[in-house]
Length: 323
Image (cartoon, rainbow, N blue to C red; front, side, top):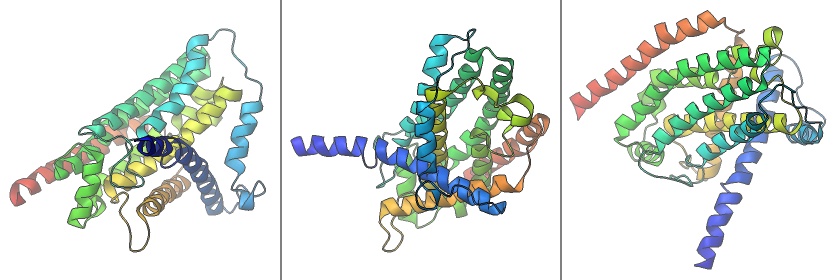
């Protein structure tokens, strides 16, 4: 009994738990910065650690040591609480993702709905961060962020439900197991949904071309303008964990999750798939410039949402025709 409890604590805190996810966050930030820089003929992180791999961790520690400035007019309670909430939400969602096996640390029938709910809670956290700052730049950035995230969460939910309909389960683990038992990834079965998912996750992460809420040439740093020191460090950590979560969702729902590829163990296979999704995010944002806010809204309502509905309709027709 003691060994079982010790093993569960190890899973929760070390692998594939909190420590592993935080390290993945730092690794993914380094890969993203390095790959993005090379596309633009730059070097990216270079000196801190071998080929700059320790730079994200060094940046995090540096921010923790910086002075923590609090605006005089802000709502102190929310201003202090929201950075912790922002870092906690993606970490909680990662407990649902099957990383080392076909089941996450937490698994139940309906955990996919909880994952979608956590995406929505992140939107609320971003809005509260900007609004609690009581700064014109922060408030404008938070309003833009809510408008963008809420818009793209509708098609995001639809393309996440598509594989669940095919697998006849709202469990992420069951969706992974369905792909393993049928020998096919949903990337090949629902390619429209895969493309929509990637676009929606770019919008959720506020990455180019959807970096409208934190456009540095217009509103300084958007909803994060007034944060510094430890609070900004928590936002940086939360963003890294969000990137890991987005790549993990793509890997699990559409790329088969933690299935062994030949001699490659399940955990390494999962990390490779998630890294592939990350490189796809980085390459996409390197190709485009920032959209205007009207282009962002038009793209969702006129293109992505109808395509997501068509994707679900095609799936229902296929299930009706082939049982």
